[in-house]
Length: 284
Image (cartoon, rainbow, N blue to C red):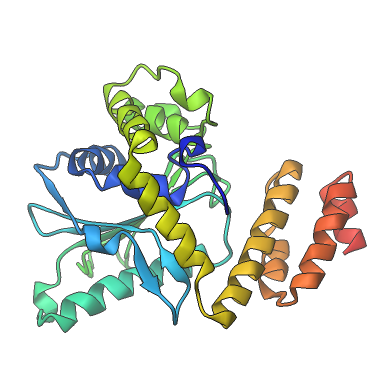
């Protein structure tokens, strides 16, 4: 990886988890995302960096609960992934299973939110925010009241008049590159987050944590390293292809299904020489 901490913006998973480990930052984010006031939040810091050798290496989600015991799972998504909806379903089920394992009855399960902060438009409808609740297809009068909400925030939204300006300001900050992210977004909360980012970049302790994270990623067992290299190659190919615009789901599915890293490296060479997405696809 060899990424310098000082070059990271809030779009980086480590930086985002570090910033949102501050309860005031997380509270401010949730209030803007959900358009509601929250008295206080508690961060489950031990879950911000979870090592799962049997799953997908290091996970950098943010887990929190508020004064009403409502649970929140927040994740940064920089690159579009296939089956994002099913991914959200998995995250929500993990939250529920953990609560049930602690002895909760079904009726005691708290409300829960899974929030994906996306640096792309996950549904292509130009909305800054997409909110999903369970609804009955046959009648609006029937309510399941399961307490689950899935939300996707989109840094590339186009409907600023339909959402709070404070949310738009924050999402524009998230979308910004390193230089742009240091500008004044005329928003007190964004200024607060900018100070946190600067503090984290200058913190020796955070630098050591970041280095430890890199070591964990490199120190997975042999099969894990192979999977990690494969994921890294896919990610680099996606980044190279993003210059042509949003990638179709069919192509993303093809990339995810390809398990031969040499094939993906070959596609990378083609991508670098291609003049368009159609040109790339024709030469795959």
